[in-house]
Length: 522
Image (cartoon, rainbow, N blue to C red; front, top):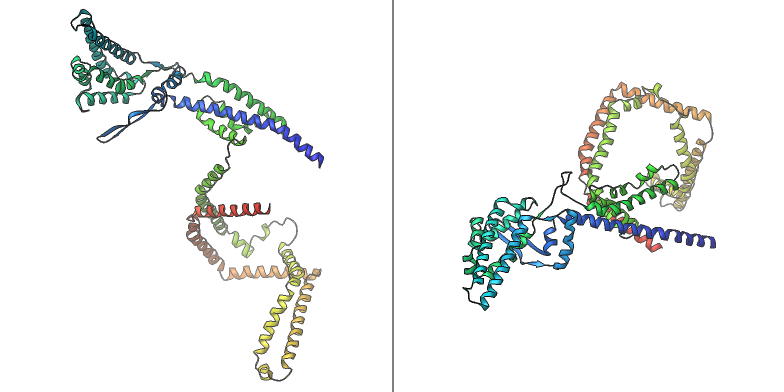
């Protein structure tokens, strides 16, 4: 016992570092897959990472609305700036025209603030104020020009964000004309006019642009195309260290498996860990979920038993109906084929007895008869003797009491006692005689065996001859075929229509009951 304990402790010490290694590698794969998912989703979610806010644009028929209003800010601006540094990896650059457009709006803000400050301390007719007003007029004219160019050239098309431009135009139309049916060019032309700003207030209009229009324009970007014809993506620089680690581990594991198991080559060992190959492929990186799931389960970081059970049951439920029908139909068709090719006819009439192959020079039919007789006579009959004698006693008594002669003597004293004694003796002698007679069948008797084989052979020949003479074999084959067709129509269809979910429910209940019993006995 001491040796066993020491051995188990040593094994525990050996496997403990291995378990930690599996957990660490599983967590590394998880970290890599997290980066993969972030990379794959960065472009679709870039607007969210850039602005850190959530807002959905809903349009159903004539109903259009952005919810929530105002947008819900959930990421701080500092964190958004940190995350959007990932633009370098995706090769994203600010689009020159839209960036210049926003820069011009910032210049307008500064010019307006400067003019307001000057008017607060000096006369509005001073040269400085006139110079500031001329600068504002110049900026407004530039913005009107840039707005026309933005609508005509659609710089959002490069980033596949034409829908964003449409939202900008709709917002501007609704703000200026209270409708989205007017011209977007006219809306921008009127919005960037001094008359509009003086009428509605410089600060109100600029605040509208900063809150509603500028965030949409800021989402536009330029992404160059590489020599392979695809947009620039430098994710490989991040993924390469993981690739080296996974490749080293894959080769080391394959070598270890090939050395540990006899007859397993290095290539076979690689196929042993086939799912790790997805970690080494630079395309379809989302498939790394396969090795990640397996590793997390193997390292016991997650428990996949419940998921495996549900998946297997779903798979069984999906194919059980078709599988049941196919299997039953195949069996029935095989039987019909056996009937149609004459095999059943040959068995019944023994026409192909010359082609029958005997592999052991033993008459299996006779041997089976003797084997079953030996089992029944030596094992079964002694066990059932009390029940058999009681059964015989009941029937003998019943037969005696129903005879007219006994009914006439039933009232004579001593007749009932005599009847019981006679019945007991008769039953004992009958059972004993039957047992002795059957025991005699088990005695080795070559003549008995010869006569038994002769009887069986004669019976088969006579049955075949009579079947042929009466022309019954054709009718038998026809009836068997019809019977099988009825089975396919009536029973196989019912099997295929069986509620598979009920069967699975019964299976789950049976497993739970078995598990409960095992736990109870433990």
